[in-house]
Image 1 (cartoon, rainbow, N blue to C red):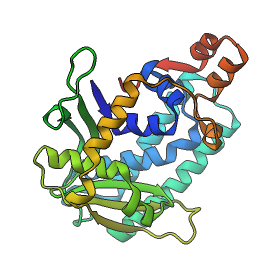
Image 2 (image 1 turned 60 degrees about the vertical axis):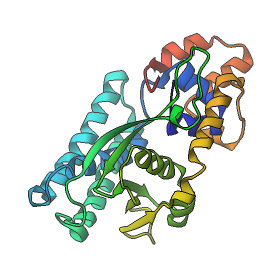
Image 3 (image 1 turned 90 degrees about the horizontal axis):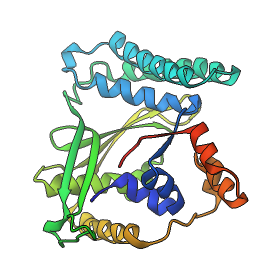
Image 4 (image 1 turned 180 degrees about the vertical axis):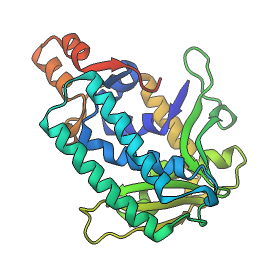
Length: 278
């Protein structure tokens, strides 16, 4: 049995969301295009930093961003006809992204502070070395993760928008889990370097970087937290956690349909596809 931070976070947020995502393996056929700016920035920077600093250029950074945005546009238009709001969001995302990356290049350039990094780093930590939990099938439990990027002694996280720096330092569970996982496998990682790229709408925010070290004491409870959640997942019912977060949930239609006795399978076939993390 595998458990990831994404599974843990989803379970804590709403068990019904976990059901749709990880029990039924559903994901939307089309992601709203207004959500694609952050993804395009992340993909551009990920591919930018796998190069040696001497091989980096502003033209390369911009090209990587535009290619990512075009891929997402192609995916959207393959699944449905774009409407006027999609086209408007595409233009706005491209304009905002170019503004963000122009400021980024002007400040950091080829950026020798961040050397060539490893991206899409997969880890698998056996928790049976800690407690030997077993599923009903007798399978050991593994904590798995795919990290966007790691440097020699730091996890590298690109954050767009207007993130709360104090919150990242004190409450970023994902960073803590990843740091614990790397150390459990023998990597001498000190913590996370947050690379903050604010959106143009975040007027008072500036390009900045924040190094957050993680101590062994701070991470001591991570394995027990993982085990507790894994135990809950193994037997607790998938009931919805209704609240404010339902407004932006991608499975909102399905939950409403179930409550009203509608044909949920029709909604699934129309709006979702099989995929996602197993």
